[in-house]
Image 1 (cartoon, one colour):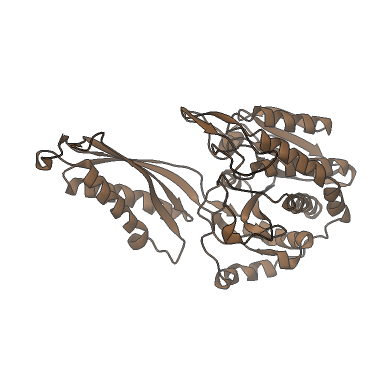
Image 2 (tube, helix red, strand yellow):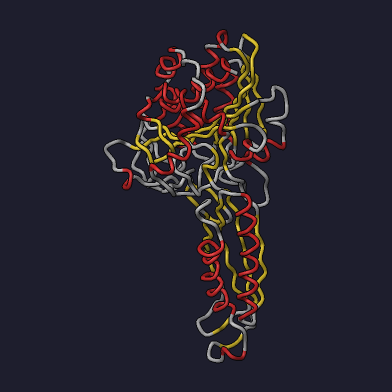
Length: 437
């Protein structure tokens, strides 16, 4: 999902010239718009079914069966069980041409839905030892339904397609369960990009509440952040709360570390180059009011949009944490788990794609997206082949954007009229790419 960070005409000016110089995209065939419109009711029905029956990462068994059954009925070459529950299908056009991949993520989130819908999720499951609600609070249900519709549209036009389409229905974009592999990284490891037919480019989309329906946005280059997790264990010496001088207080040291970490972004990073965030999400230590504990644990997230800055944050985080701990007579042990890399849209592919999107949505509805510090594992595909990831608005125009619940909220609500634009955009990009490459 995407989190708005930066806006403004000045930012747009940085990239608009490269788009303006792009060669004209081929005209989108009229059948793309009409065929997608004819499938709109089915796409919405699929979305509601998936929304009512959400499944967490690597557990998308029902969703995968729904997808696979549909693709098999279309007569496509279908492979199931990829990266646990992933589904991959191949559509070979009647004419020779390039290979393009389309990706949709299938997993839901451990969120209890609070949207008043007749198809609202009532599902509960166990997640990390806790009983939790399950909800498609990020819109992956719409991504699956849109790609199911695009698969049907393109299959019906097989005779007119010059090339091959690989459909990737991916599990666990939000992360695999503890101790498991999953998501795009595992799909790549299991050959989704390296086995024939090998795609030369990949397209993906994400719905969001930060745009109204009909709006499409994009960004060349870095568009979403690398996401890493850090853990800091501060070791002190336990003592009675009445006699702090008899021990070493890890809570005080940890508190100083929390404050010190904020200087990494504000004082060490060249923020005019790219934004970054270091956030502490939890601090845990102690069991009683009058006992200073031995240890205190911190966990948090690092978000960066530049590889060199990412390395700089990692280095400084270790230096700051260990240095501050030492100054308090404590010891800090730091672990950093690498997460998703930066989501980077190929600039040439983006420049080519924008005129296609403008044909679908209208020039006045296609705009430059702000950079975001949320993360996406679509980035793993983009490390292997050129990729283009764009955004579709799904907020009712009557709702002010600043009042629309964000993705991942239990109140996240999709205006289903936005799904048609998503299907038309994905189908148009596919047809245009096959005919022009």
